[in-house]
Length: 466
Image 1: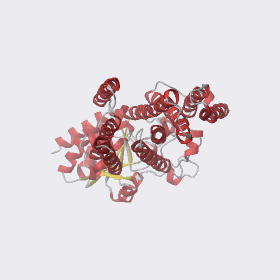
Image 2: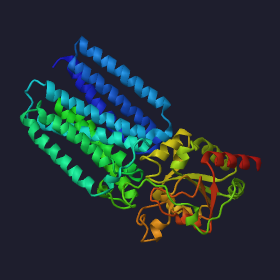
Image 3: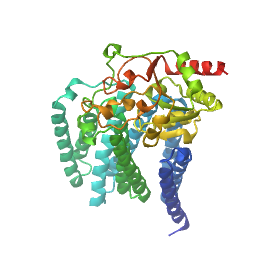
Image 4: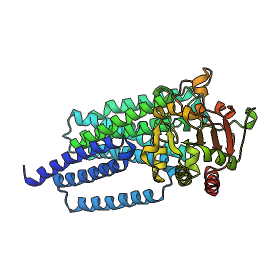
């Protein structure tokens, strides 16, 4: 073996190790930022290693450079311009891009290969096309639903959708079984079309309440498709990287399902929470009989004497872009001697880790971000809890009411705190579409208004109090 190809293999090995370390680091908030940098470095080294091994000709170099410039430019532009509230849609889009990349690689080998592919490669082509197409179309649908471009058609909530999806899956199976015999034939296109339609058919009925699970699952699919593409092109690095991403995505999906008290089957085919297609809304003040509201000034008075304060961020905080105002308020309270922390529910927001990223953007110290299982025992000794845009994840009916659709779902036990202030625009229900028993508890008061405006007013009140 000459020196250059050997160097390429060595770089591949280093890239795999760095990617593994990057994935491991992403499991902790404190190390997530540096871990993301390690993973990006690993991908850069992987590209360099492949180029050293393959040594492309001048025309190939032109396409490589052009593709890198276009892709890198688009990535940089999106990173600079995408708002935090649009991050779930962006993640869904990136998952779809990963699936499409694997699909295109498999199609290129099937259509333009030299015909020497063995059965392992042909089966890998089938898997990569099937999973890649589902990932792409499903991710685009998820992005469209999160963005508000797509609704949930009525027919997808009937048993008709199961029959349609089964028929599409059978068509995909027929194509998959025929592809190894004639990789470049019509069966390949049947598989592509059927798989794409199946991704749409499975994802379209799923509502916003289940989007954290769906995004995590699609991320896992993109890893599986990448691993299959690795077998197609004979890349050990792609196989290892895809397998790690696929496994990590499946584990995260299970974590999300547990946090929502859902099974993956109920997410994909409907079930609890009034059906998977329910996207929240509904419910108003008329459904409540014991609501107490207060002004920001009254809330500030309680904060001034509190020794321990816990903030509970939700999607409403992201919508209001209020994370910086929240950080300013926490600094003011800390200066007065209060102990401040943030209670993070696993499915708060629209994607796994949404609240962690949102608060990290405002430079909230990592040690103040406390997971649900750790913070729940601390609520009884908490003086003030401020809930910011969260709803179902703080509903005590999940613990106390066996008839509630949320019953059994792990929630933040803020009802155990001495005083609770809930910042909301209105009395609208959460994704489950039911009343929140927390709002009527004697220690709860509602502070109506935009989260950012309310927090800024609280900052002003606390600051003026000296």
